[in-house]
Image (cartoon, rainbow, N blue to C red):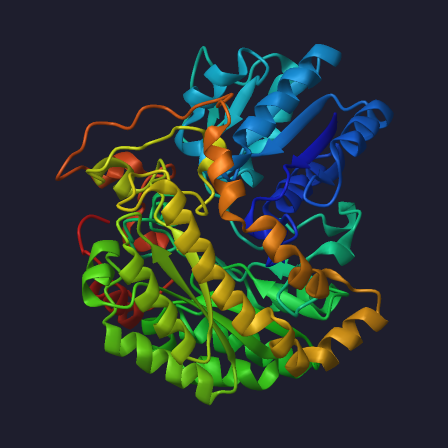
Length: 512
């Protein structure tokens, strides 16, 4: 079969600070190609809808699969499926990915028959059988498949992360992907899943609290093949397993691979595995992102981070001591007052680190979707991008956006304004000399994207598609009901016993 894999358009914050290659879609495309299918790929983050239609007309795919990782992209995906079905009624339309896996029937209902099926869970092990089943007239036994008429067996994990490699050659504009000054940047996966259980996150509920790792030699092979000088490690929490991180580093040293790396991790993992991060700082790690989420104990308890304020600050100090550029994330709650915003702004200005502000957003698949006592003020899918307030705000909505954007502007000026640019003029000049403009364009784009009037206007638009109504608030719930991939317990985590104990001590310690 001919399969076209499609990644939807960029979200609000990805239009400024980063644009990552669609690694998950490349992995699914690679699996489909390994199963003998003819595959093409288009990324609407860097191409237009006119490019999509041109490719559809020229390639004439038998099937089109859309990546539904983000709720805010669902309206675009549904509209494209509807128009595709109108023009090519025999084309098999599939939607998979993280977010749609939690609400398959809702998305199918919105499509009014334009989406043939949702593929829940990991796409690599199921895309081949799904296409084969479609050819043979029966997809009912494909793991993870959901239609309006039936639901197949539960989704399954790919047998090994080493089995499928991303079809990177199908991406048509590789120089368009970047994160900060890593321009261009490729993305790579060392490990998949998360063994923790933060209330605002659905990574652990998607993967059933599993944690799987790829072979260090396979990872090194992939790094050697990458042409990009910058690499973003996409793991939800990098180097949970110290021995794995050190083994990859050893392969990199052995082969003389020269790259610059950016990764995300937890403060407690950084402090526990200091030798790993020190080693990586010597082989190319330059940027590290730590999700603090809050700067006080009350906020940390709310998000169940299980890391104290003191330990967070200790981790920041250690990362700085390694010469790393540190970026942190804070979650702005809709209950914040003007005084709270001002306190946060002053705190952010007192530290040398880059600070990103997102907004508390209940997502299906997270505990706060079920436990958040405040009810949603909107169900417009387009607003679920962690940059809009979808819960009641203490300030008026215009005031909340004024304060939010003011905070973001202060932080942007601190690191990306003209005074800060003087410190990075060498980097900017080097990138421009190579034709790379992504980093430099960040400076110009901020005010045109982060604008309180524009964000407020987004609420005034009539929703084309709305999310399901939140379930009734519960104090206690069976968290297993949240899982896409069922919890596999200890055997699903490639962690040594000491690391497993460490994880358990820093989480709720409930079920799997």
